[in-house]
Amino acid sequence: MPQLDATRKPYLQYIIGQITQTIEERMAAPHISRGFVITVPGTRFDDYIVVPMTISQSYGLYCLNKAQPLNNPEFTYIYWKAMNGDMMLLIANEMIELDRKNQPNLQCLICYVAEKPSTATDDYHEEYSYLNSGRPYQHYNDVHLAHFKAKSNCFYRGCNTDDFFTFCLKITHKTGDISLSHAGPNGIYNHEKIHYQFKKSELDLSRLNYVHISAGN
Image (tube, rainbow, N blue to C red):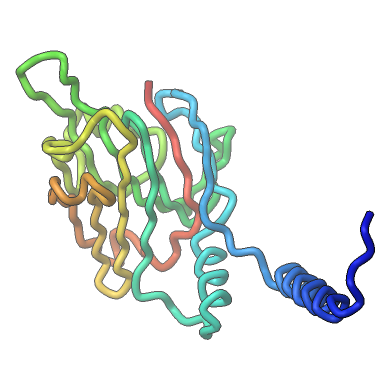
């Protein structure tokens, strides 16, 4: 290996020092999560997978990253991608027990996006996507009784159904407003929003912390 010219040694030491400092700073800084990738099997909504970070933990990391104090958040935005729909995002005040153990104090915000409509025929048909409150495991009963807080059966109209969908759930804590809409490229062509305003007596949004996901067929 050739010897380094003596005049370049100070420069080499400077570069090594800068790299070492950058590595040490990154090791000392907290890791800010940017999201998760989860494969969800179809269980007809019998199983709920909890996302490994709560809303309060995510907000705490956000404030840490922005160097701002922790306050009660005005908004919560949850973005996620799904391929074919027929899936549920459920936010609860407790972690849902896998053995269906009785949880008398459980409160849930239920956000369901229907299966993407078929393009095999000229007749457009789309099942309801909806927002609801209640308990897990009641999806098919709610669909049968058309028991929803807010719903839409044109939620996919105008969307590109050959790629991942990007959804956005927005929670406005002060007013109790919830809205579900498309984000990403589909948000340009589809402006459909499913919206409902919860009274605190119906659902206390400030207590919701655990995000779960589940899939149908």
